[in-house]
Structures are given as C-alpha cells and as structure tokens.
Image: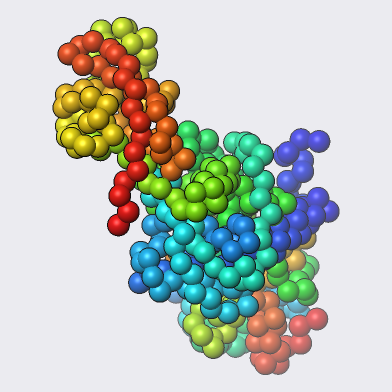
Length: 188
Length: 285
C-alpha cells in the first residue's frame, strides 16, 4: 500500500468540483458558490451585491441567477438556479471534530477548481457571544469565498467566507441551512 | 474514501487525546500561550512566553485558573517548567521514539485548537516543522498521529520559525529538575563573535567547518577564565559539538552539563589545542 493510495482525495474532490460553481463578482472578480439541494446556489453575501449574478457551472455553461435572499451579517446569499442537471452537494449532518480532515474547493484568483486540504483548527465564535465559525488550518485565497469546506467523505461542513490570521473561516452548514429555510426554501 | 475517513477520525481522536493534558499559560502581557502537563505537578511550556516569574496562571481545559510558579528555565532551548497543582489536568502521554522526516504531526494549542503538517527536517537540537504555529500555540505539544507528545512547539527559536524541542530533550530537562530540585543555568563566561576558518586551519583541524567563534571577552573569574581561555582564542568545538557561531555555544550549554568538565577545541596563535573547561553555573537572579 503506497502512501499516495492511502491518502487519495480524488473521489471526493471530483464530486465537490461538480457542485462548486463560479460566480462573477461585483467588480469582475470571481467568487465560488455551492449547488444546494432544491435548485439553489448558496454563496457569500459579499460575492453577490446585485439582484442577479452570473453563474458558471463546471461544464462551462453560464447561467443568470436571481438572488432570492441575502444576509449580510451572516455573509450568506441564496441564488435560484433550477435545472442545472447536476446533483447538489451532500451536506454533513454530524458536528465537525477538531483535528479532522477538511478540503476546500474554489476558484482562487480565477483558477478553476483548486483544492486545498487541512484540518479543523477550532469551532467557535470569533468574539464572545458571536455566532460560531469553523476555523480551519486550510490555505484559502480570494475567489474561494462562497465555496465548500467538506469533510473526509466529501460532505459539505461549511461555506468558506473569510481568511483571518492565516485561518480559513467557514459558515457552519447548520447556519447555512437555517438561512435557506428562512428564505422559504426547504433544504432536504 | 474509507481510508480517508479513518485517517480523519484518527487525527481528531489524536487531538482529543493530546488536548486532555494541554493547559493555557498566562505569563505575559500579550495573549497567553500553551503548556503541557508533563509530570504530575510539572507543566512544560516555551520559555519566551513566560515573561514574569510571578503571577503566573495555568488554565485547565474546563477554564479553571490555577496559580503556578517557575520551577526552572532553559532559555537556550526555549523551555520553562512550571510547578502547579497536580490536579490541573491529566498527564500527557509522551513518546521519545525518534521522530522521522515526513511524519505527520499535529500542533495543539489551548482551546483546544489544532494545526497539522509534517516534520520537514531534523536539526541538531530541534524538529523543524512544515506547519503553522498560530498565535498562542508556543509551548504546546507537537503530537504524532496517535496523539502522543513528540515535542514542545516554539515559534521563538532563534534560527527557525516553526520548530519543536524533541520530547527526549524535554524529558532530560525535567529529570534534571527532579534530580537537583532546580534547573541551573550553564555558562562559560565568555563573549564571542563568529570568525571564518582559513583553508589551512581547516586542513590542520581535519574539519570542513567553515566558521567558529572567536573569544572577544573573558570574565576573569568565570569558568572559561579559570580554564585559561584568553581573548583571541578561537573556539572550534566544545564537548565534541561543532561551534560555528556564538549561538552554537549558547545552545550547547545545557543545565545537565553544569559541573562537567568538557574539552574545548581551540585555536591559539594559529595552533590547535584542546583545553579542559569545567562548565559553571550562572548566579541566580
């Protein structure tokens, strides 16, 4: 058994790449988004500022998507994207453990489908009493925003939103689901 | 994918296991650092994070604050040992098995927080790491994939940004403290500067060492002065360890060497010679 075979990320990465869309940012820059259940895309509020956004699927198809909801404080936005023909992301149900493996997929600096891997550094608020964030020891860059942070099974545990002190900060999937529910879309 | 998940779970379990013996150390004005409950009642941390000798608090995993006192320091290796109530946390599982380059390792900070990486090189006295030591991690454990402590992390090591003191070195220091009841500070009583060795000298010394440390100051009643070292002597080796710069000299002076007589290989007036030197103890502050 070679080390490469033991640590092969390829099976989960392929699936993650298919559900990670590109979103044209407000100034022509690129962000990322995740194909969510029920014909939606979730991304960061700071990635889409208008009422519409240009979404590019993994096969290169470009679509115009309407912004259904935004929550600037949680840094989340929900886009309508029915009939993409791509199965949505699998969402993690168990809480993440500190030290467990995580991978991020996104489009940093316009490079498509870039994978970075690391571990969960901590989970908790950034300021006392604040909302919890997943803090991950994973390298991110501008363009990763709105892309998935996934566990070792490829299930999405959070939405990458920020880089702080070298750490990736992701909105936990439970918080994204609550946002989607509030927007009137039932995530299954 | 099962292998990946299994690895992921093992890493998380390793962090959990190690974190039980991890404490916070509040001994500086800036953010606190991390420590490891090494022996019942003894916490090891990074010396550069212990700015004060008094008013030190150790924070248990459940948030309890316990007062601690400095039991010993070794600035050369950047280690400090604190005396605390033994009930502060479980004692760490330590391994002194030789770490290998490429081994997967995790750094654990108070919280707990974690980062991962590999051992990228083995320096003479340090493990050099390809991982991020986040603010407050210094003094915390570097652990293997089983969660066993292989070293104490420090971002304060002079030549390396991310490094760890091997567990075997920590263990020797803790034993020294237990044996003597304190940790003496070894010293020679010289000031040195780096100097280049000529090709001719290197041939005569049968060494490929390019530099050494020239004595520019001698404390008359210090260990080096008593051994007869004078200004201008070039120290090439001490106790068999190559001295290529003043830092090597400082790092080779370990607490356990106090009172030992070692051979200093020097060059005086162009002539190599060996001089026995008894390593002294610096007066306590």
